[in-house]
Image 1 (spheres, rainbow, N blue to C red):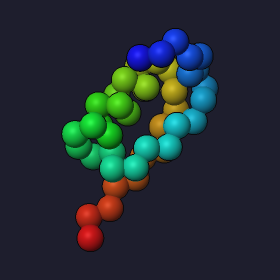
Image 2: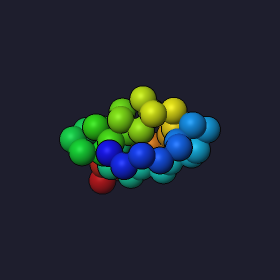
Image 3: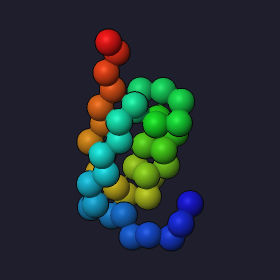
Length: 42
């Protein structure tokens, strides 16, 4: 992952309950980002 300062940054992730969205969310959280997650099952 690129070297960005993510501490206290808010990241919005859609499709976040599984697969790629979940993995990206976990990686960004580990780098200090605050997450806003959304997943819709219609």
